[in-house]
Amino acid sequence: MVLSTIDQGKEVTLIDIRGGRGVRSKLYSIGLVPGVTLKILNRSGSGPVMIAVKDSRLAIGRGMAEKIIVE
Image (cartoon, rainbow, N blue to C red):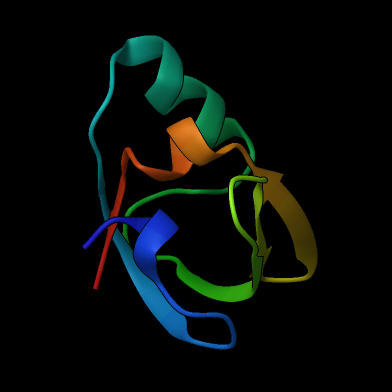
């Protein structure tokens, strides 16, 4: 499944990032690496997806969230 389809309040594990080197590099630099657990804080309409990763809260744009594969 892709990150943008996960319901608010759910915890998931990042499996893969489907994007080019630039996208992967950017996400890796903010702690989004395979194996990390994410919690969906807010997934409203067409806006960003708010997630919690370890002790951080991040806003991921909808397009980028659709490249993040989770289970």
